Length: 305
Image (cartoon, rainbow, N blue to C red):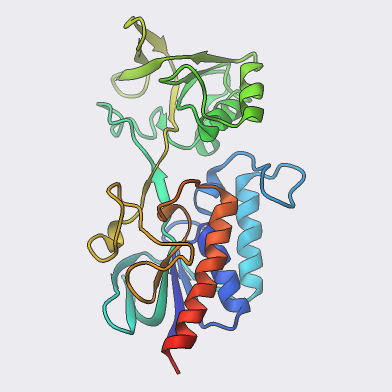
């Protein structure tokens, strides 16, 4: 019998696992792809306390994993297919086995939102990408574009500018949502051109991305940009399908929980980007992970002898 099963190996999940093992809990963590979550696809992290010099996302994720394993956390690379949350004992079912546990911590995170354009899915991996740090090196001396106006979009544009000959940043408003320090950097960057008040209407190309058509929302003028790569950074959507109909969620699918990370189902907790909240950051993901585990421990002490 496990005390805690964590589903998801992002920063929130790894932190939860670290705290759980350090607290003496019998704990398993399941991750279907790679640990680190969205942090592992981030070019540079410079706002996490204690890291004075910037650190790459993959390196940060690797350190988190090493730290969690140091305390003995078992990480299984196996996809969870079903969870049973009714009753005192919960069940987590993978392709290979069924596990019983006293508590579950949901840490499945979120995925990038799509624009919903024709050819967007068709050209994914053929010029359309949602991860500049994953695919940016393929665009050396080529022309690329990033859609979005937040921190991620700006960071993606600056990362791509290391390789590409030119980068367009396309934003539907007349000012960025990114932090001031990032705005200052991108506005001064010689390789990056910002297209304000602009939306993408279509992707141009037969077998791969050759360009995009854009529209200025104020002038309604349409134009075509010749591109080799098209990166989308417009936000996230929760990976909550596993618990749909089993846990209370917001209208857009984020799991609802208070500051203790407890959901409406006793013994089930949610942490990280999957949780409905105002700010999704690495530091808040780590905080959620710690709080979620401590709340799960308290629940176990109060409900199990």
